[in-house]
Amino acid sequence: MHCSRSYRIKEFSTNVEGEVNRLRSQVDLFWQKEVEAYRRFGLKDGMRVLECGSGPGHVIENLLTAYPGCRATAIEVDPYLVAILKERLEGRCDISEQSIMDLGFTSGSFDFVITRLVLEHLPDPLGAVREVHRVLKPGGRAVFVDNDFAMHLRTQPEIPELGELYEAYCRLRVDEGGNPLIGRELPPLLRKGGFTDVDLEVVCAHSAVTGDDMFLKSEGVGIPSQLVKDGYLPSGLLDRLAVKWHRVLRHEHHSIFRQLFVSGGEKRASGSRGIPKLHVAPGTPRAVERGGHGDGCVTGLGPGQVLAAQPHDRLDLLTSYVVARVADALGISPESLEGGMRINDLGFDSLMAVEVMDEVESQWGVSLSLMDFFEGQSLDDIAATLYGQLFEEAPKGPAEESQAMSGDATGSDEDVVEWEEGDL
Ligand SMILES: C[S@@+](CC[C@H](N)C(=O)[O-])C[C@H]1O[C@@H](n2cnc3c(N)ncnc32)[C@H](O)[C@@H]1O
Image (cartoon, rainbow, N blue to C red):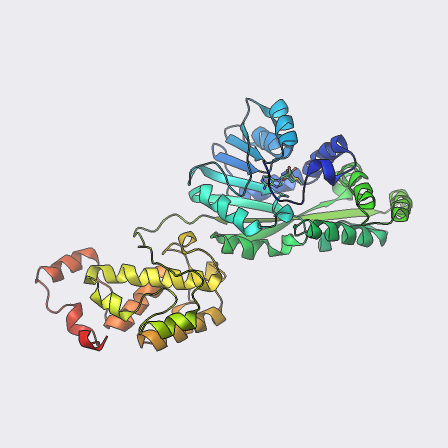
């Protein structure tokens, strides 16, 4: 299976078997704290769990020991690692050769998804986050674990050469399309991918707690040697590093410290109301669209369409407008948003709000304020506010709606609306 990525085990290190063992030590180094973080992010026994990019399977193996009631699935893109996975874990979990970019599962298949040290190797991490979001059940949760090599392993006494090593490592990963500094970017990435209730934890390991051995094994010489082989590092640096490591380990009060970034989020359960889809013309410049249609906007929906709709459809249309408009501002697909999502959880900022307010004012002739967005409102709430502004009343529930339609109530939407049909 061809897939663009910056981790190919046979090219990542000069010693493939050594790299499999290094991955094992790197799991052991953090596992106790990491599994606690997974639990805080929502992992429970009995869940249907997917791990994307399992490598040789050390995470999923530990997970099945800690949570024996979970039904686990492991996917991995590299056939060499899939073979190791099958050799080690066949019968204990479902295993398949797949890319995280295009998962072969129907939407809503899993309760919890773990993606560990994979996003940093992908040219399109947002695409991967969206794909994980898709295969989660509504209400399901995912964790993404990555490094940030500007905040990586440090020692006391310091080894300045580690800076050179990680800089060379970063250059190679970037040249191959990865992002070795992705740790700091995880929360906004998850929000863009459609997750809500996003948070970030930093899990750290210290030699005084774990001992030196796991650190040394999870560093290894395979990757630095490969950097020398690929021309990213002068070979003399390896010798200097070895000497400095030796000094650190002989130092009576030495410390070795490293951290991992764990970000998690939830796929918001669907709201009670379905949102009709609006067509957003791809690549159409907003100004052209605005100029082209009298009441046009980024969604192509204007007051004329809302007024022409049946009264009971108007709120849904306005919700669709808000969803499409917010998605456009965030640069994400409207399908990844739901009406119940809170604007504060989406990474939508005040500049974006001002842009929407301007559009609403110029195209719809009504004013929203910043307070209409940022006091914990959901997209549904904003649509209801817009409805209130346009029709000078709160949206009707279905019961009131049918009462109004059957003539039991006095007045209707048409009585209060300010626009005359002929004006639009
Ligand atoms: C650094 S290893 C981490 C392995 C394992 N998750 C762990 O924490 O030990 C990165 C893994 O991601 C896999 N990978 C890279 N691109 C992938 C993709 N597009 N889909 C699935 N797995 C991918 C690699 O083959 C490799 O096994």
